[in-house]
Image (cartoon, helix red, strand yellow):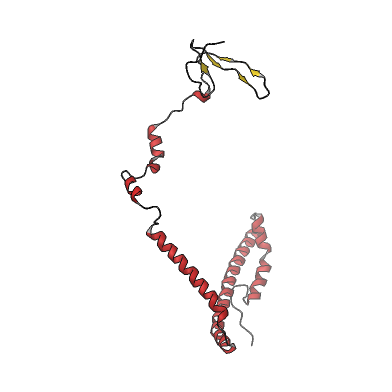
Length: 199
């Protein structure tokens, strides 16, 4: 058995004896059996013991953000950590004000008695605005449908000329009649023109 170790054990568990022989010392397994000492041939370096090349420039570049601004450390120490920045304080105050305003609105709604006449008066001015919005929404929807219809008809023309269509394009061609029905339901013809209302 080799003599007492002079060098510390490497990361891979290899010890060097006083005579210069390298070995992995014997050990006891969990079940109580003994592992034999393993000799390591001269010159062998296991991957665990190989030192990685460290490029100082690259490492400095990676750690540049951690270092901060030179000379700014003393300023950080002088700041009181309990005090937040001005912007953070303003934002916190705004949040609190919004919460208070929302709470006050909720409190006011059930406590105020509303007369039926006031309710009817307040509903009248909003109805024309709603009808205008509904008409605008219908026009927007009709424009979208007209665009889809135009694209579907172009694809149908391509198909009739003999060009091949993708499955998605073929589905669009199939939906032409459905698009026309949707336009009629909104009160528009197949070209996107508004139908005259019958009175």
